Image (cartoon, rainbow, N blue to C red; front, top):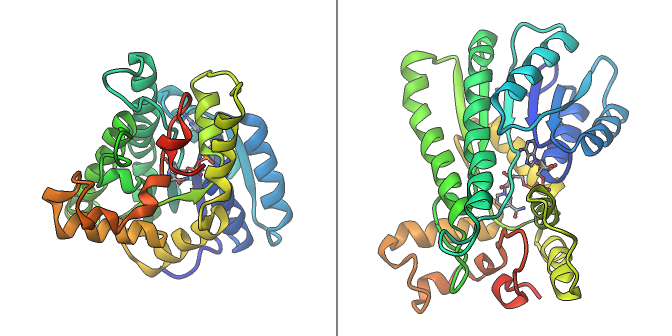
Length: 306
Ligand SMILES: NC(=O)c1ccc[n+]([C@@H]2O[C@H](COP(=O)([O-])OP(=O)(O)OC[C@H]3O[C@@H](n4cnc5c(N)ncnc54)[C@H](O)[C@@H]3O)[C@@H](O)[C@H]2O)c1
């Protein structure tokens, strides 16, 4: 595809992190954007920033929506079509996501299912709701954000990440399955799979809030949230640039960050050794240790970032 100018994009989870940066960069490049988030204040701020940096004629709208609720996603669609006076959509970035439900054994069932609902059902409902509008555009792109945990279902020794990895594997499988489905049945739309490594965002704090977990009382837990953001090699803005460059290039598979590339190569080279932490293959992916996406109660040792 050419650039994004003159197009209309949807970004879920546009309030903070990579979503916010996608909204800002798309708008700066002349793309109108409808951004949603369940954090209404955050997405309102994003939209004000993006609109301020956008050329004349670009419209950026904000919408409150929990992507794990299909009725809310449909309401978001209706609102944005009306606000943008549009009949179709050019790009959809299914970016909203949370962590949590690290253990199938010890995490609460409620937390596990909540994480899965946002990360998998949110992606699924957005595809169900927006694919007809991408097809109608005649040249649509659906961009689904998975993770390195979409091809590697752990964060290292003593660091399970079961709900998140299960959902992110589902996002990866679904997105890859759509490649041939769309080629066969709707060739005017293509899909893109995004697999970030460690990106410096506030996803740990946002995850804690999403699960209704109180502010951390001990300073070590609070430090971990900050360290997750500050110790990443990649900022949210740099990650968004990699994603947009990848989409523009026509790639269907975008690994975000050097750590994601190393981990992908290691797992594909020796899949049977992916969970054998003693071997040097996984030792080649040391930054995987800092990828923990957990809501609360995480220890600095478990996160590997403190
Ligand atoms: N940060 C990383 O290291 C990393 C690594 C791999 C994958 N990812 C994935 O990248 C995506 C963006 O993550 P981020 O790091 O920018 O996180 P973030 O927490 O900074 O931003 C996520 C945004 O999504 C919103 N959101 C969460 N649940 C929602 C829901 N149910 N409905 C609507 N909005 C919702 C949040 O309010 C927030 O604004 C996520 O899918 C995440 O799983 C992140």
